[in-house]
Length: 166
Image (spheres, rainbow, N blue to C red):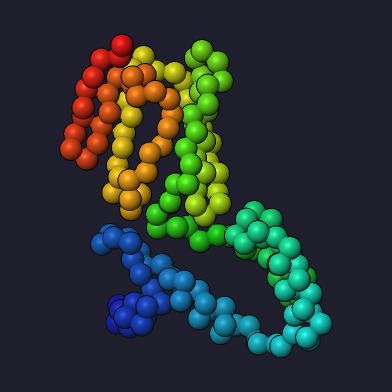
């Protein structure tokens, strides 16, 4: 059994995230499995055109795009259709907004380059720190929250740079 699992891992069909973890299929492993259980049936040209047209109407990799993919897959196969985005290895931040809701609450909004929007409610803190990690952006970009004097400290790759608010 171990030899078979080792062969599948060497072929790139299985992986194990860490030493004590069990093995899980890779994307190639799932693709191999699906292709081995399903017969390839060519779609008529009219259906191919219709699908291209539908997907051309929605933004790539948006929530609507995945809903359309699942619906299209279910309709064509007459089975359940599931479409989910692949989890990215890293998120690329396009924009960060910190919006004051009231004196004690703020909303942190991250807009990722890939199009996803993440939002979190935050309670106001007694101290405010700005953490800057330019290595994650590829090149340094200024992100404006408010005036720098409103932060108690700025933390960069070199360490904290404390300053007093004026």
